[in-house]
Length: 171
Image (tube, rainbow, N blue to C red):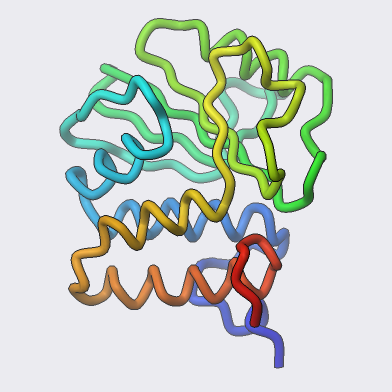
């Protein structure tokens, strides 16, 4: 049996979407302070916000690019999360162009999560923040309250990312 077959993190069949959905679920369970602490580790100019709402798999308008996740707070900020699970898989195109435009807007943050060893060249010179899945796990573990169910979700997410070979750990 494969860990993907028994995932507690949602119904997505696409592993990339499932990984991002799992991250968003953990952030949701952790609450506003946990979200702020984790995101502050991953985005340099992050400011804490209250009342954060989380959306998975959203499009900003019909026939628009579909992004993996969105965090918002009473229209005071947007944090768009886009992720990849294969190295060097960020591609030129309308989705990247739209993310670049959005990242220039006031109080709009874009975070790209990839397994790449160094920042993807296509993100150089942009306002888009980048981190690895390993960075995400490190931040989640750093801010883990050791309370359930958050502790359990972080442990399971770590195992899931190991199974996908997205961390330095080996199964």
